[in-house]
Length: 265
Image 1 (cartoon, rainbow, N blue to C red):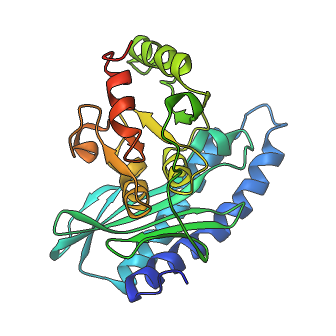
Image 2 (cartoon, rainbow, N blue to C red):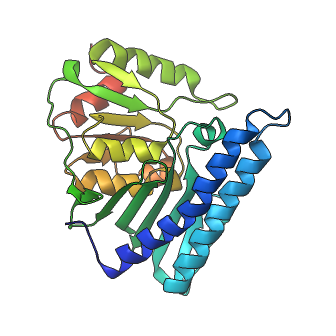
């Protein structure tokens, strides 16, 4: 049985309501692929529209809570102990190209600690949820990270620096190390879903650099509540601050961290 606490009901209901317009917009962006202008402006509008729905729904249910959002930035609340961290459309490039792999991501911080999380893919209707000390679930199924222990057997996910973003040379060094030591690597383009898929055992690990807090906040809690380990790329708990992240099970995390740091031959 999945989590049905009051705050989880609020968060999942907000995600499902926002997903209605996102599914409709996804159908429209597919049609726009044939236009000369292209769908970029449309996608930006869709992103803001979804964020507006999430902000309205969550504010109605918890009017004193603060927010950190991709489009609007930080919104201070009267209740300084609680803050929602929201990515209304993680996987914008996938959405832009009619690839059905994107998500709505919502996390709740309580006293600076991640307390609740939702990652929802509106196309597949997969709702990943977690609450601190209450486990992680995909729809009605309890999640556990994969149990593989050998690097040579694992499938690893990452994100690659896109055009104009720094860090490509560093990424290529890390990529070469991972490809040389593992069974394979995937780049799917939505960090929140990559992390949720680690929690579900579809990926054995995920790493990336220079992400934003809204990209990873919900996924961090989902992986941890599925029994995984999540740190930054020096082994600390500063992912929301520095944007670097590595998620894996407890057997693989240290070897992968050493591999990415160039300490394994």
